[in-house]
Structures are given as C-alpha cells and as structure tokens.
Length: 287
Image (tube, rainbow, N blue to C red):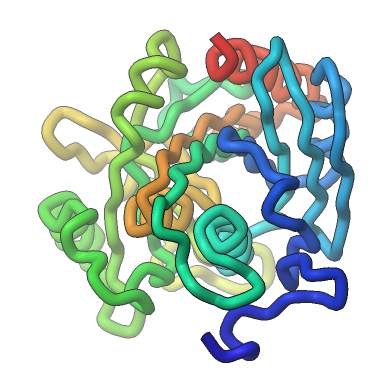
C-alpha cells in the first residue's frame, strides 16, 4: 500500500487520530464534542490512554472491567469517514506493511449525540435510538460494493415523497446493528434518522439564505414507511452505519433530543441528559 494511502506519523500512529493499534478497545463510544470525551472519561474506573489532535480527542480505559475507547469525531459525515476508516486500519491493517491482517477484528461503535426532533411528541431531553439512518450526505456513494447493505425501498420511497431533486446526492438508508438496538435501546424510542450534510439549509433552517424546499421538515415529518416514522435530524449516523457494515463492525446511534423542530422548544442545559445516557450505555455495554 502506498504511503500516501495509509498515512502514519513519525511515531507510527495513524495520521489524524494519532493513535497506535494497542490504544483502542473493541467497544468504541463516538461523540461529536471533544469536551464530551472528558465527561465520559470521568465515569470510567481507569484511564490508560489520552490523545488529542485537531477535533479528535481519545480516551481509552475501563469500566466495570470492560475496556472502552471514547473518541470525538467533530461534526459531519466527512469526519466520520476519517474516524471509522482510521479505527478500522488500527484494528485490521499492519501499519508498518500496509497489509490487512489475516483475522479481521470487529469493533462496536455506539454514537452518543444530540439531535433535533421532527415529531411533536419528542420532548427535549428524551432519547432516540436510530433504527435506520438515511443519509442526505452522499458519502457511501464513494465506495464500491455498498448496494447490499442499504434499504433501496426506504430510500426510494422517501425520495419520491420529497420529490428529491437530481442536483442533490441520492439518499441512502442503512439499518442499525440489530443486536445493539435490541440490547442497548430496548426501552428507548426508536425511529428513522436523517443524517444531514449541514446544520442550516440541509436541515431546513432559514437565516439569511432560503433552503431549497421551505416545507421539507413538514414533508419529512409526514413520511411513513412500513409503520415507521422519521424521528430526528443529526449529522453522522448514515456514515457510521454504512461504513460499519462495509467493514464488518457493529454500529448504533442514540441521541438526546435537544431541540424540537415542530414545537420550537430548545433544551439549553442538555449536559445532564447526555451524562445520563452515557451511563446507561456504559452499563449496557459492560454487562
């Protein structure tokens, strides 16, 4: 493999994350905000690794005798492309030779994030587990062989419902890992999540620029597919789910609703809710 493809630093660590292969655990909690990494780190029993580069902060330690890595991705599927590919390289490629390892290692990714609710009954402070992620971002289209892991019927039905313009990347839909969804989120509200490639126009917000469809949120909220509804916006899950399946890793997203786009409510102090959710996930993954 060319050095320009798998880039490492002078100390042998992977380029963006600045991590070495023995510095990651099989269970990985992904958060957006680097500050949230320290919040979860304080909940661990031990910490053995602390690394930080750009928006990527990492802590690896243990909770109830189970090893965890907590890593921040920053915002967006472009950053997830970096995080998931580099974590996979750390687990499954010899960084010295560039040769994939003979026995692949499967990681567990659980994203803990914040979201905007798209149904009136989803109160700020409540939790939503992403049963299916629909990507408006187009990231998965850049990879070969993704067709098997996407739900074409869901993507096509939503595109028809929204009268999706040809000028935008075609939506793709990917399911969460079934085991994680059932074991971690059994008692949490579940739904379809839209992963948007931006926070303002791509989520129907209007400041000084008009979104391409001023009624897109109302259309999304009215959509139904096999009895399921679209519950929320966020900005990372489609890439985590898609790349996770292609690389044989398990993935699940659970978010705290901090804004309801229908009622206009916003939860100013959402950190206690995020901390509560983090504790529930640590307990579930270590049991």
